Amino acid sequence: MESKYKEMGNSKYDAFAHFRTKHSSTLNYKPNGVHNQTNSISLKKVKLDNDENVNTSNDSHTTLPPHKLNKTLQEQRKTLPVYNVKTQLIHHISKNSTSIIVGETGSGKTTQIPQFLFESGLWNGSIIAVTQPRRVAAITVAQRVAQEQNCKLGELVGYSVRFEEVTSKKTRIKYMTDGILLREALSDKLLLKYNVLILDEAHERTINTDVLFGIAKAAQKRRAKSFYPPLHLIIMSATMDVRKVQDYFGDEHIPVYLTGRTYKVNIFHSKQIQEDYIYASLVTLFNIHKDAPAQHDVLIFMTGQEEIDTLVQAIRLVAKDQICKSPTIRVYPFYSNLPQNRQLEIFRPTPPDCRKVIVSTNIAETSLTISGIKYVIDSGKVKMRVHDSVTGLEKLKVVTISKAQSLQRAGRAGREQEGFCYNLYTKRQFLEMDDVPLPEILRTNITTSLLQLLAMKIDIDNFDFIDKPSSDSINYGLKQLYMLGAI
Image 1 (cartoon, one colour):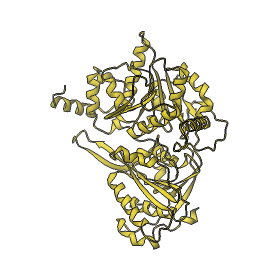
Image 2 (cartoon, one colour):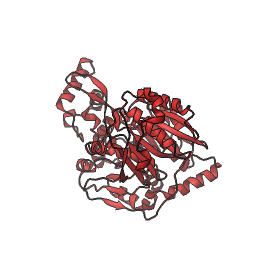
Image 3 (tube, helix red, strand yellow):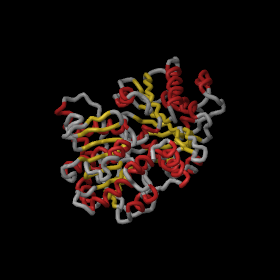
Image 4 (cartoon, one colour):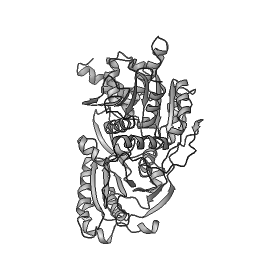
């Protein structure tokens, strides 16, 4: 494999050198073995093993008639690793007020666990709430679960995101963004609409998720002391800092480990530091393209819309050249500001004799299964909001990702079949990365979150943050609210 990618920045692609800002990039890759998405923290866990060797893909795109489609989906559900431990999982959740579930990529936790809880009756006549950090994940997962439940979206299964709600009085499984649930908590601190609350992708540690940790924990305690039904809280992720979460909710809550259905992912690191990762991504893509069969699709991670649009344009220009023979390349940008109908285009099946290339921000990092992805090209960068409480300025800064994010990105290539991940950073750079990203609440302006807590009549000084912001950050936020006349 290594010999195939010795020289990836010269000869036939030099005609497109104007797309790079520096001309010294030569991409040499060295293998890093097999991607294995496990948590490195030494910790007591309940391990629920899957005894079956599953090789069936989980492709939701099909043109079968409705009755045959549902039968196929039910068969696919049974092949997921989490299905084999359904009984043990329901028993564990029912016996614990808080469950910490570490589910590897491809285990089926996001789509299946809410359905298990509904089918078991643990929801007790209320609604099962499942939060996602991003709206596209909430929408697409809800669509999939509605298909599996053989119901119209908005009936038994629905979703709620900013500016759009597809639910009804019949809805019992509700996917939503964490911001929507936080908004609901403004008028209902005890979250009485829900008896089961699932905080998914907890490793992302958004401000909203961190605040919800504290609100849900307080709601659990208050409901336990009253006549209200208990609130079952489930924290889920593939790569979260399990020790921190367990310390926060209590050592008695033993994490459950779910084996995944991730296929082998061969990871390669660049032998040299790549200063121009946009050009390096372009070169790597076309070296893959010249040998890979059709319908072996590629996912490329960039930091933001500007970089994505630049790379998409460059790919289309190179693809028009005569040196780029079949398969035909179809390029799709993917970022949060893209209209929803264009975001959903990436989930369409790749036509015959074509290759789908998706250029995305980190919104494709978790939750989403994009059919056909065989290769991942990782820039190793992400655009992060950073706030300076001294100057009061907030800016988007391009920073290096964490090890956990790197593994999440690599895992996108192994959802349906053996895949390959090309990291545009060296092995040394990988080892120097932080284990997990810095929580958003410790690096951004928390003024809005403080206002929400004050609106709920919560004492900020005594609020139980999983990671408490600095006193400077809190004081700056309170000062801003006072100057605006909000408090």
